[in-house]
Length: 496
Image 1 (cartoon, rainbow, N blue to C red):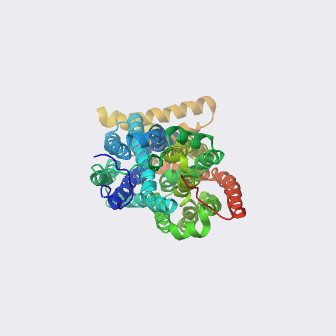
Image 2: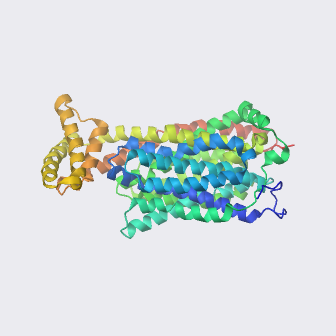
Image 3: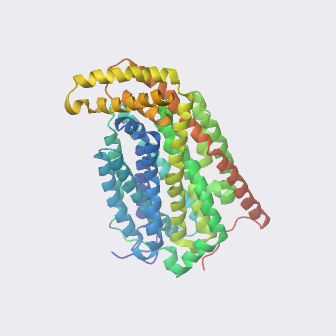
């Protein structure tokens, strides 16, 4: 089947309702991937004895791979066709999930997360211009309605992961396998359908014009910079929330579900908000609320306090991503599929390559600052003796975890003897390895009691470092809003 030249519902070759539904389910697949990778990060940290920085790289790969595929394929969306990109995404979701399920360590976990993320980027590269082509007169509202299913999918994936935990099914592999369910559904809905042409193709905008509009327009360059900040504020904390709060004894996945449930509801009701506030007004209010919510969330506290802070944070970030895309599509329409793709590329690349690993590094340092060094040293001494004794009694592969943990513990003890100081990252990693080693020593519970609060504190501190970005965005979006008001209100540019 070839792609048609008309994205309207009146074209007999294009099933508008099915294409929009399939796009929404495809976005659910990307968000279930986001939720389940986030939900298993704490388990991966223990099973494979990973430090926060390594976990940050896995979480980051699940984001910046999105940017790589968007950067490569978005410029060719007009020529390759949106259906071709969707087919590649389908193959990537299948392959990436299977690679992670059968992973043997950090390297394969990283590769699997990267492949899944590249499939996610292909969905965005195809479906954002698809929605714009299907609904050319209502882009911002429809893009918000489409992007309901990113937080909506996180809710579905997060609840499914929590249900498995509640049923005593702790297999992280089964949680990753949840990605395959929406993948199968969107494959059924989309792979054999006729797709419309993009707006750029229908309007005769050449690739050269698209590149010029995207790379030489000052407003576009400003929006790319802002996208890096809005994506960091939204996706950086969302990536770490389950692991951080779980370390503090709270069901972090439920907080993630709660935040994204609010986001889904508000995006679904975006129409009245967009018409009342205008896109620049929405972005300004979002910058204010996200900063307040993030600062409040970083303070931690009781369950009620965390949920209250999460509410403000969710309201603040819910409109960022789709409204940024809608603003670019309406105000810089000649940027076309490339502009939309590059916005997603910058957002995900910055979060994956910079924000997520940076937050992990901050968490490692801040966690060590509150670690009770004397208590940790005593626990590690006990751990060394217990692990050595038990590993000698446990032959072959059954004792591998014990011996690996012993090596890490002894490494820290040697450093203490030589430098008289506990090394920051290595100490937490040694405690983590001891906890997950299978040791029957009573010191395991004491190690958990020392490490959990420190990990929780470190993660919360990392949230605080993102708050200044909200301040920058308040200034930028405030100036854009004032400019619109002085010129008679927000207006979308016509694509001649």
